[in-house]
Image (cartoon, rainbow, N blue to C red; front, side, top):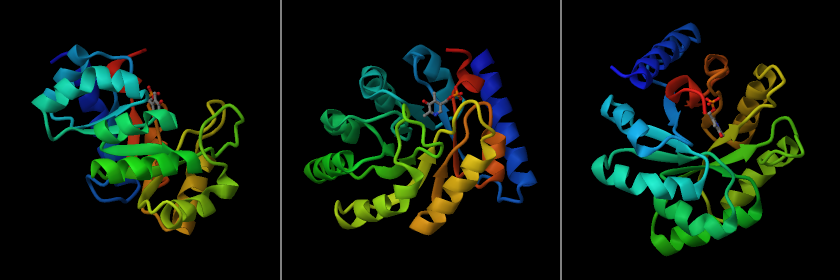
Length: 220
Ligand SMILES: *Cc1c(COP(=O)(O)O)cnc(C)c1O
């Protein structure tokens, strides 16, 4: 087995253990393998090892490598986990199965228009800037619940869940707890939280999917 596949297996085992420790059903957490910066040659063995859900943070990079991989493995699900510009909404709707980074009305409107035009309905998440960091994407937590409401009522979008990236220098637990509370208030079921350093913690706080890159693919 190559190193990447060995690490994938280890991550899956840790997820299974964290599910048990949290008293959650086996298989209730989806692993999103974050393949950004890695080429198709590095990704292919991971798909062949059975991994079916992947995350990319740039539309253009994903467009360069995923159409071929998706043609070979049509059951692969691709998540957009990076910031989305409205001029890329068309490409994003065409390529991604899940878009996790809706954080403003302009993007919500652009996605709604493209989904209608293309007849495609990727699953949608709202990204929340739980640490209110000025440089970071995501809606402010104080506006998150009303924004989910606007996505539904103004833009006609079905929001499936919330996503967050906690500040790097803080204990992530309170951020995961905040996202879980906001999801309950907004009436959405899914929680995308936890990365290589903290996915087991995120599972304890209710993550339904974790986005793990370097722990699988190695350092970027
Ligand atoms: C890169 C990235 C990840 C994965 O980070 P690792 O620390 O390598 O696991 C998760 N989420 C987002 C939004 C990312 O951009």
